[in-house]
Amino acid sequence: VSGEVLQDIGLSIGDNVLVGVSPTRGLANSPSTDSVYNKQIKLQPGMNAFVNGELGTVKYVGRVDFSDGIWVGVHLKNQNGKNDGTVMGKKYFVCKPGYGIMVKPNKVTIHGINASKLIDEKDYPA
Image 1 (spheres, one colour):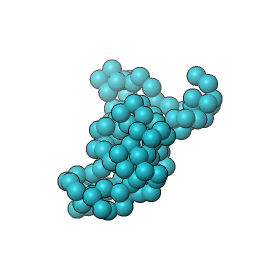
Image 2 (spheres, one colour):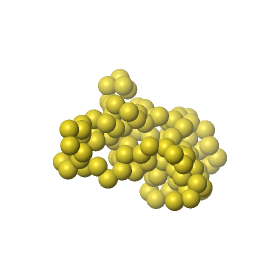
Image 3 (cartoon, rainbow, N blue to C red):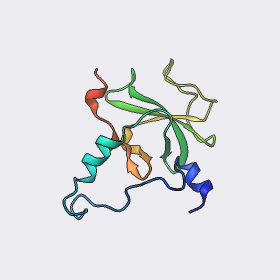
Image 4 (tube, rainbow, N blue to C red):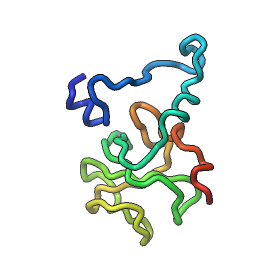
């Protein structure tokens, strides 16, 4: 993997990444990957992400006025989004028109991890 590809997904040469460890067939005497993810990585703005096959940057994580639950606002690298960070008249983050998208965490991948595993609902009180 080239340094440019690593940089595009938010990694550098020499970074440690947990890859290919299954919770049921993981390393002996190690915690499940779910607990490792939840303790070491939390979804937050600034992280590089994949959404619908598109590379972008997380700009917003939290509750929204238009629906229940936690949502993720992503500024896409290419103009394949649906908004400018504004949804139903409320600004959640800022980007150029057509570069923003708001999705549920299970539609976002961070370093190969489904973002729903990187969120604890109690961190976002209603």
